Image (cartoon, rainbow, N blue to C red; front, side, top):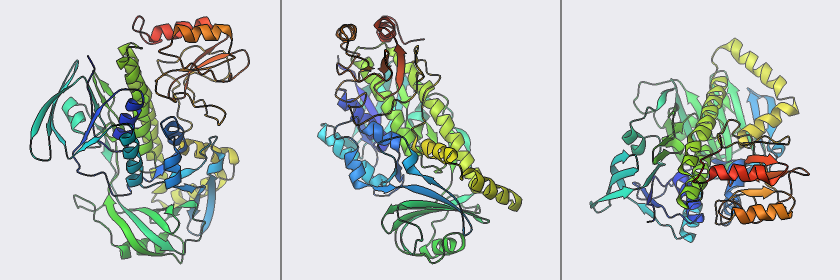
Length: 493
């Protein structure tokens, strides 16, 4: 009997999850209570690691890159002084830039990818009740015409945002806090920006912070903090108010016009402890929300989806034991913890109010950003190419310098691990008879396309999401690792 998979939420995370599953031959039903995909810019950047992972899918990352606008650097300013610049060409990736792309466009492209895979999103369908249990969940769906449908899902995937009904049904704490400040967001057209359109700028001012992020030539995202108000919902700024803040904190001579979107918001930093609860999973904002500093939120959620998809697909194809799914939460929860802490640090540094602390920040920033080693680290962290799983239960033995759980950087020489229509591990090795025998012994777990060795006389096993699983000098160690993935033995330990 074919397992039923229900994805609640058709934002970038839910669509990424549905697309990855479809690529692996797993059909998922995906519903969203909104009648249409968003027409707002919302999450504004796709980072290098996300683009690398999108390259594994049908059509690759090219449609996103072609629709986006490449950002080459981020300049930090204190009043009128340049504190330093982080150059994106330091990122060790074929996508060594930040891709500015409104979320509305990201969703359009993901929806088009799903349509090409034969997957339709059921929009205007609200999940009104969920009753999870050990083997799945019962749910009630309300359709646009008011009709209610009772469904049973063997697997329930909650990608339904910060107010997730799936998370509420699980009754798991969403721990954290709301920062005591208001923020404004403005997508506007601007003239007089003194830097190249390919540079974003962060302006540290005694009153607060101002971020200017190019969306395309002449159009920008402007974000800044304001004193907290007693209003339940932060007020939406006017264009004139944003202009006043840019005049005070930002570059002189800039003129804003033709606003696309103006909004007020507050920053929450919250996260669940566990991402898996039986046959129910949380991903994206349903599992973690944080400051927009660094632009990590949507990217982290899409990478949640990619991590979960190949594992669930292997289980549903009866190629791996269900215990493989137990690795999703420790891997992605650890990443979520780091993203949350990093966003909090960036926000705290940018919004210092004490004059002495501000001067010390500016001096320290000027000093640190003068070192290429430091700016390279900042660029690599922002781009998420440093995301890895050092403590994953999936990590096996290793005989060379690269450690299990580390990213194996894609190259243009061969298809990245995880490409194609099967969720299989890739071998990086010399094409010996022993390697061929290994592939023949595990056809459901191994790609038959052997890649060049990462190191001489070494066989490296790379996961479908491009992270090193283990390495060895002979095939027996690799076989033992794969044996522990199967239904006979469970995941490596």
